[in-house]
Amino acid sequence: MLLIERQGEDQDELRAGLEDLVQLVQHQRRLAYDSRMTLETEERNLYWRLTRRVVPTLYRLKGSTRALRSWKT
Image (cartoon, rainbow, N blue to C red; front, side):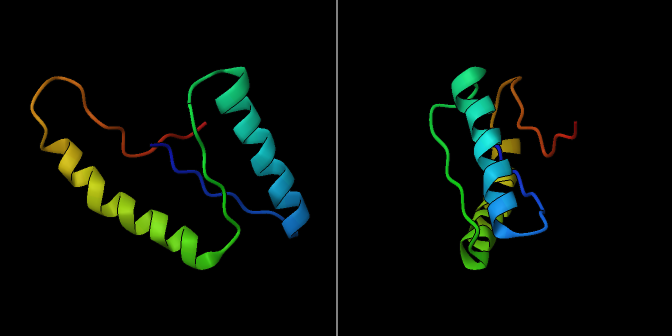
């Protein structure tokens, strides 16, 4: 799961930026097979809560593959 939060001047600009990002990650680079996008505060907060609950579990899994906490470009 890759969770990205963006800011924008207005909702139209924000939506366009997110749609461009989805196009790049999912369709052009094929780094994802599905995506979810929201401009709703409650839904965004739900995604962050899920992340805070799931990531610690991923760190406890056995093996050499590890989850990345964050990624900056």
